[in-house]
Amino acid sequence: MKRLLSLLLLALAGCTAHIPRPLPSAGGTALQFALIGDTPYSESEAAALDAMIEEMNREDLAFVIHVGDITGGKGPCTDEWLGARKLQFERFRHPFVIVPGDNEWVDCHRTGFDPMERLKKFRELFESGESSLGGLQLERQSGPYAEYREHMRWIAGDVLFVGVNVQGSNNNLGRTPAMDAEHRSRMAAVFAWLEDSLRLAQRRNLAGMLIFAQGDPDFEGKMRRKGSDGLQAGSTARRSRDGRTHAELHPRGRVRLAADAVDPGGDCPRVARAVPAEPGAASGAGQIARRGL
Image (tube, rainbow, N blue to C red; front, side, top):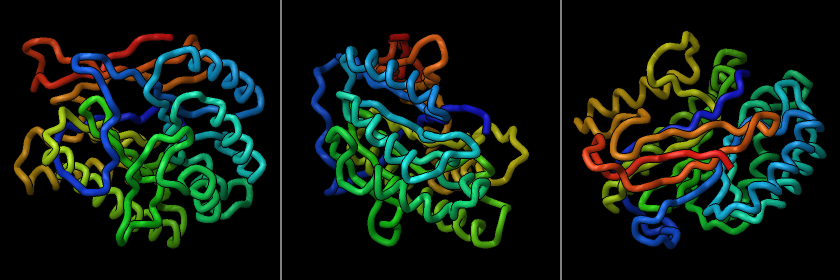
């Protein structure tokens, strides 16, 4: 799959009694956090990631987000590889949040593994508690969708951060009837979580909402694949029903997005930071800026 950080942004809505307290922040102070994805794919990339972790540990970050793909498109998908990645990520001195990528479950059928068993293992390693690696308190999806432990959220810098399991590899659609059923069930959970998160952000009067996932949801409708553009179609229908033009699932609005994927083989990692919007900026509440480490 194309290496891509699909980190998207939404502006708006809702409230729940279970959301952890917002992270403390000083008024007007930038919220700095790291965004990485699609690494490591191999032992050599794992070594490069070790060096990047050391560099990032010297930075003052609120947390680190990984959008998945912690192995290659043909594995390894073994318990040993996934366990080694957990030990590696525990070396971050900052709270570390991760959602699954397709390489560590959807694509594991290529090397003889059951994708659903691999997703279960990922949840066991990375999504089992009520906090992230490093202790960031999270709210996870519950109720009828409680199995989707990887759907989480928290508030920081007056922004609601929301993670969802939306994948590359056609979002697990079109390979077998069983996987098509998995896709339908998971996307129902995704839409329920996003809608509830919109209500939460609106009731809290937050500046915006940032959604992160592995797969490109194709909000522009440019892809021919059907698995991920279902998210685009669903979000359009929901905008039509509630009549809120500011609820558009697109990196424009009350908070704007500019963030890069991090490949440890590249020039440098990136840190995204939420800063006050410039006067006259679109919808004016905030923006996401970036800088190299």
